[in-house]
Length: 514
Image (cartoon, rainbow, N blue to C red; front, side, top):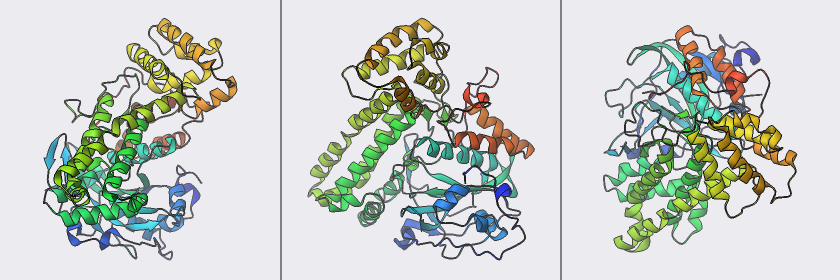
């Protein structure tokens, strides 16, 4: 059953029944850490919760009963009105650099970690409510979320999962029956988020800022057990842990960039220790390829522009390394040795990122073997795309057809303002393809598996959100989710999801959901 199936279409009417008990099977390890790691706080009940969307596929994979989740009792839990059996709600403490400025206490100001469960794959997952009311970390905020940002995170996180990018997931979206006051008045909503964990770089910074070596050691040991068990077997487990986080972040950002994704708020509190994409605020996917592209309304200096993302990730990882110095010191024997070890670990980021990026570009270009000159060939194509305002996603998708021969070039040529610029590059590309004994059919199929037809194009996302928020029409949201659940399978009748925005539809700026 697809994650885009509407629960009302597939599940029996359980609106007035609470006979089904919700069994999450919580096993809450974070709640067993010292009290200074979190605040004990329950979600704040809402007036009239209504289930908008339930991710049936994800529910099944977590071992949860979607019928029970869609029941009246289930919706009450997903809205924060009831506490599920075994749940120990916590708001997690963390700090963070926000656009380069350190804030020593941030924390979950509008979220509650309900607990952890073991999925059918044997992995441990956090279940968190986002928009569930104020906590001790709210900093005078209302702790609520508006419907638009909740649906945006649902759409984009599920699209990323379908693309194969490590990400948090959306289990459910519930409207609250209450208004949320921002620059205007919006309907309120609560998102149920699923994550490998909610450990962030900022979690370590929170305790480092206090000089709390014992807490950092606790946290690192916890992260190693949960995410990097292989590090526990190493002679220097904390250094191995840092190495592991660096590798995962390098691969993650490389994957983002291969799809034209711009996170928008790569603060240290939005950098996950597990290596997942987390906190979808003013994120966006590029249409015309522009290396310096910025969508976020709050990123006025372009700190987190598309081509700055690897630099931002490295900077965040350097802040993690700094936070770990207190325990690297214990491992290495001196402060100077700890600093040297941290700096040595950080040197791995750039070559790891570069290798992941060029490997991904080879797949996108239909190259099966590593050859000298591949980087130059790929970079030349990207530079020509940028110079010709070529649509990032559609250009690579149409290149799959061009792999059959020059007679199929027209789809790519139409993406270039100067088609001759593509023609000149294509001659070099085809000479490179001849180096490999791969049939055109096999090559094209491999390229289609690396180059999606469908991404969450900004104008289509905004249209779906407007319909839901302004007219309570969730059908465009449902339709978009269905298309994005199979991004690599091009289907007839879905041209509006495939093609770039017309000038009057173009979205030039995105906004933070807080």
